[in-house]
Image: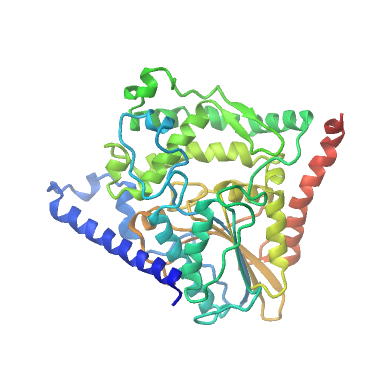
Length: 468
């Protein structure tokens, strides 16, 4: 076996063993607790670990699978978010002073993939391998011919590493290369959610649209901010005492829309997003749920309330109709090209939550509520486009979001066909689906074409203003 793949798999085994031993130590030396009747106990997110074996449910509550009986799997295109990383800000940043508590000691540098993230991604790769083998798209021990499989990542450490670990699980003996196209640890334009067209009128219209769509949502974050401030003990922090951080409010949002830059903002939502992101990541990594919450006991709903802050931040910046087709334009083109690529059976594109969110928004996907996760765009999630042939050869596509549940992330659960990740069917309201939940190929292809053309429409509508 290739040395790189061997080292990855050995690391996974070691990490799983350490997790098991840690659980035993906690069991043996943990404090004795008084038994409480079941009806009086409070369920926390950590208590869901025992339920990782149950099948996942989809949008309508039915048990979901990536497979479709009576159809033949012909091609798979995946857009992935990277797996668990350390917070984007390192030591000496605002995160270090906004709470009196010590943050989790990460195994990786700021913004880089963690050891747990690598292990989880390898497990996900193994699951996809077993699924595609079960559908006869991959033979066992598949060594693809040139062009049959493509793995392409943004050039940041966390995305390249995620793709490497996924590939180690997907094709452990094939030594498949991971593409990245620009200098290491910089942003590839295909994956950069940047505005490649702006004008004064466009920016004014886009900001008005954002405020109209999300104004009430932002105004409703007061309770989220209060919980966040309580969990980090904000008013006991150095940043609070020296005035670097002021009370989190819902009416101080300032947007920043500039050419060849990602949409940005300043104000309480940005500050709270950084803390929300760091806390949720800490919850995934830290075995002790109370320690992850700096000594507080939080329910799963509490963690969702904290995560909602960063989810709203992402929606505000990347998902409105005037923004999404602009920032997602090159990635939409890349996905559409891969869906049509002759001879390709599997494509893996690895980027960020902003990529997944803006692509879904560009395709017209409306609000959804994912089960068994605290995030709207779960860490390590896969937006899966799978092509299926009916018995008479007609092509259809399934669109699904696949992700490890919070319990699976925290417990490093092994994945296989009997113990799958969560599979959530994506509904595009403008497109009809068959009784089997599939989209006709012509309809989905046309929807991609419309989403790509929306960028040209924006340029056409506002180009005169830009020229002036």
